[in-house]
Length: 389
Image 1 (cartoon, rainbow, N blue to C red):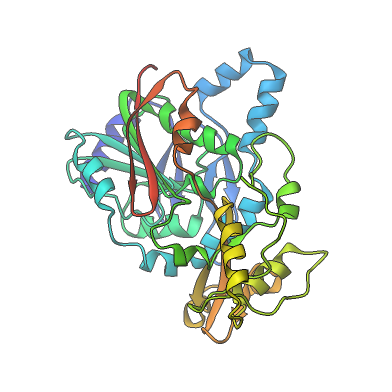
Image 2: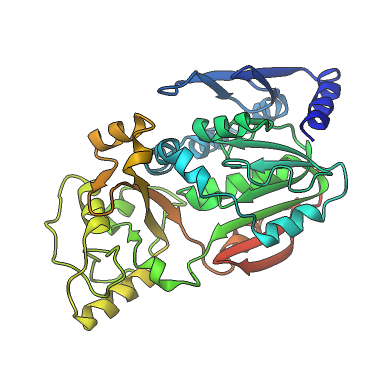
């Protein structure tokens, strides 16, 4: 399959000008864009797309200055995502990849339903676990994490480093696109909308787009008690349209989210006036002791009213030593040691979706329609069809 995909690109190269990225001697095509260098500690430099394609450059000439500024703002990565998404996945990539091998049945059904010869674009491909699932299709992928992309390259996949809100493909390039568990890592509504617009842009008319996101309505509610809701103070620091929302603000704040299976909350921790990370990690690493059921119900109510969370990832000590990223994260306060569990604890940002939220994000799009929607394994999912170029 890899050889067939390579032949496909060779034919394309003969008719269209491309720039290439070399990752460990593997040439990867970048469609009509300029390049910038990404420094990766402990590995060779990677390159990623620094500007949109030629068609977008032409389009920008005709739009207003305000619109250009707005577009630039959407494409500018918030610090929250850099610290609690990008840096985290860069640090945990090998361990994360080792846990990501099972294919979701609904995604498999979608991919296997595509016509033979289809070109599938996987935006946020991670370790590339869906590549080759349908042997009759060609797969291209991109991800914001260079270490995850290196894992894909080592497996022989056609991939590159790129941002979900600025996909490195020509308009109408693919026959289908997938975004599996990606949009919930984008911290503003405008960026989530932009990512969907990009997915639709890069497929042909009649092409299909599958999107899955974590749902507020988790099948296993006990998992949610291990998540840390973003404090109202932190949410207020995000100014402007599309900022994260607390759906029904509670008068009380959640002091701790226990990671054990016991019920209740632990002793109150001292509030930090200066740093969110102090409160975050105290909350994630506390062991619950109290049997006060009234407090539990109030905390659960607070959790149920949230959509913005930090979700812990426990990187075992023996895996953390593989990379210097964990040492750096610990030094910068972006991770904490949990000696009881023998792990470095990272926190990943998530915006969990409510029922109908994905549909609302695409309701004002005039070039795509929702052809299917479903709930699967605690995820909300939609399939879009592109109706016009």
